Amino acid sequence: MDSSQESIKKLEWRVDAHDDEITTLKQTSSDLKQTLDSIIELLRQIKWIAVGAGGVVFADQIGLMGMLKLAAI
Image 1 (cartoon, rainbow, N blue to C red):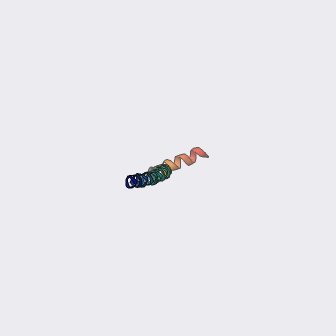
Image 2: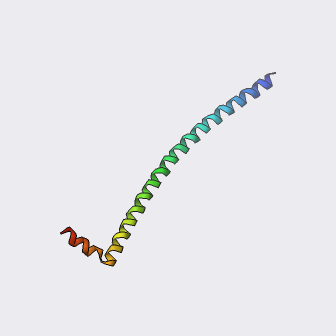
Image 3: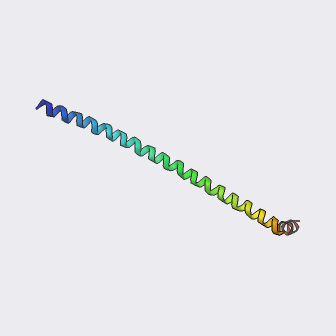
């Protein structure tokens, strides 16, 4: 009977340890999600900066920049 009680106690300790590990992994997963979300937001900003810069270069190539400069004066 003592042997089965010891086995049960060991299993309970293992379950408790696994529960702690699962909690830690869930927290890590949540932190990684927040980090990835901030990276995605930064990449979106970089994309729109590049699109804007491309638009300026395109407008300069076809001569719209001169017209915009005259309209601003």
